[in-house]
Image (tube, rainbow, N blue to C red; front, side, top):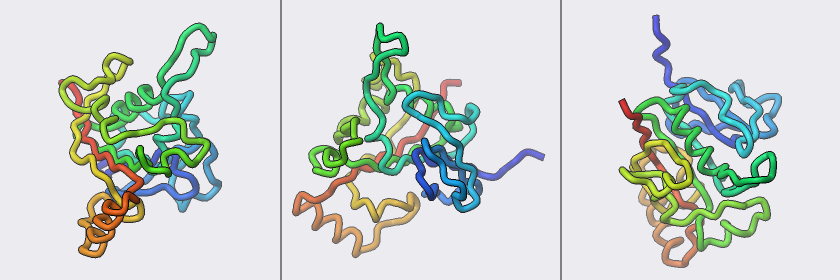
Length: 200
């Protein structure tokens, strides 16, 4: 009998993988996985250098909370004679491991917020237009080797603590908080929610 359980993968999950879509099974990948990640399977992986260690079409959803900003845009190749694009490669990998119709949910500090720059390990500054390199009929990332297929369901500024549950509707209090943060120029995080489609 086929396995009908839904599966979610949290990238750069740290000690506690998150499950924003409340899938049946939860997995994680981290460069330094914890011994006990709450009973979830967390694999070791340096996603700047390696493929996501799961098979193609493995997941109904993938999340990346405060992770994409740590993935370099450009690095030298192993022989030092060329360049590679780890961020593009990661987006290709996310597309690969998602099932058709699968969802990417990414929350990232975004320019011009100071949170995008203050951490010295942030090497990939996201703007409110970066998604155009990965979504739509002709994503701009094609020129750098992006071969995935995403449609943007949501691209919006969020208060980070109010965006951990993908299915939750913002309460009146949370909407008021976001309005006030926006008015004061204090919104720091951009939310991407993409749908993955695959050519037949």
